[in-house]
Image (cartoon, rainbow, N blue to C red; front, side, top):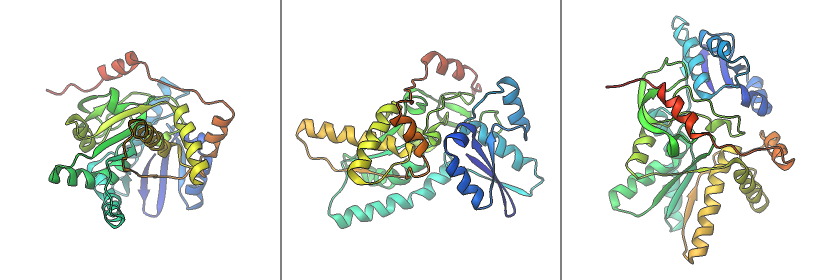
Length: 308
């Protein structure tokens, strides 16, 4: 999802698959006065070019960025573009979460052995993990950092570390990141916020340096973990946050099997009250697991820009 702001008017380009999967999130934005478009649209050159190639295209975060950037760029200065992930300054703004968590752990008289979060563009996990990464590097701590991503859109675990566009059409500056290729089209999993072809540059560098681990998970196991968590804690995770829940449960079970006590810190970054259609599909046995074919990833990466 990406947005362009015209004074007090807000135009939202919401990925089409999420537009239909998450109608109540769309309705909430509309109640607050935003105009929400199912991306790709016929309102921009970028959207029209995508639809000309595939009229049934269900959109992606990369396409939404292309459309929003175009609207802002062609506005004559009357519109501003806003993106809530991927860019490094967004990650730094989010670190207030991790700063607060550091104080909370101190007051609890404890410290995490492992810090876990879900990743799409990287801002959510970076917001929690970066302050702890700083502590670990300065003090030589052995804290592990684990990023949980979808098997259907595995930018860290299957992406290459290279310069690429942040959007599908190629309107943004090139950034060095782990990427599946800017025109990579992920399948329509219910965790729409994680359907992005790349990863924030800072997160990508930390993964390349071996500081942040990454693990990809299948959709069905994620929803299984989300239901287990809900029945234990009374909180329904958003599909995106459920990837972190899956990782937490797996790491807790590993600690139990090893007979070790481990402190696990995670960020439950969103509730699923507006995502019950996804849970309805899971409980009805209608969800499927997706693993994007390696050859399709390789094909998308062939179309990345050549940087010497």
